[in-house]
Figure (cartoon, one colour):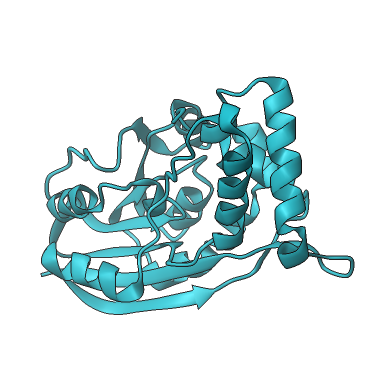
Length: 249
């Protein structure tokens, strides 16, 4: 599998919905003036800035140097750091994460790091992909790989758990779960499914030739069209989210 890379300008143009739809998670967090909050998978810092507008101090971490640079340009204190290798110790009143935890497949290590980063009674609030998230898109990618041996092996990079599985993981990691829910959220892709693939399946196409990339994009688009496209509504991705709020026991 190739490494997933991120380009902030491309992300802002074709995937700004990620941050705009994350506002409800900020509402669940209820940041308070004077709190110190860790944004886990902060991206370009859009939601970190929103949290800081409530009077909290945010520290962002992300595995993408490009995204960290963009977050810093917004005035966010941000560091390049993997979510499964957090180095904080009892520093934060809350840990917040939007649309990032599903990229962190070593979720027990993530939960341990969050627990270590929090003060006693600290909050862990987030939203990410749930079981069934983008299933049509994944099936389309798998089908394209099956038809094209020259693509190699499709390796799914995402962790999309069920509500019960993640609640159990949080409890095992020392958290009391206050709220957890699966939220079906069909999500319009205003610039189309090909641009979505160029961003979120970069790990797939980064090792392809131009011809392989175009073949892959065309095949996946064709495979999912009957499920994700209508002339009236355009492209709508089959998103299913898992939203939760937990407290360090």
